[in-house]
Length: 149
Image 1 (tube, helix red, strand yellow):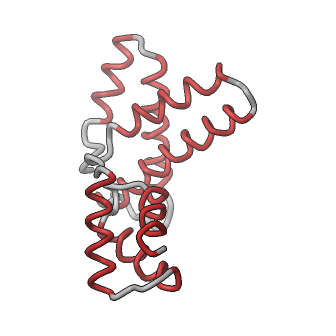
Image 2 (tube, rainbow, N blue to C red):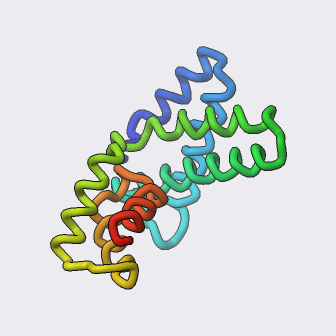
């Protein structure tokens, strides 16, 4: 376990501090990891790439839930979801800035010779693979659309 190596220690620390919000988020990560490990596809241990994808999925779920609660005018439910997303995101590698993403996408476009929206799939595939774990897919997609338009 690469990025999740100290998860158990983090859970113990949250328990001692009686930080229920942090504890809930950390337990969600542990639960997802255990489910993934017991599935037939993963085997017994997860690779760093699998761990990153799993943590990204959990962050995205929390952000999506928070957005739904915002749309339903439920601020009491938005705050815990956003706080949990922030806690879970601590286990992700450092995220790239928009300028860095724009530069990488620009390089990929130049490298592939992409000329319009018809080439978006090719550019997105390469960009997503190159920036896996360090950039949000939605942000990458937005920047690719801007540069190809």
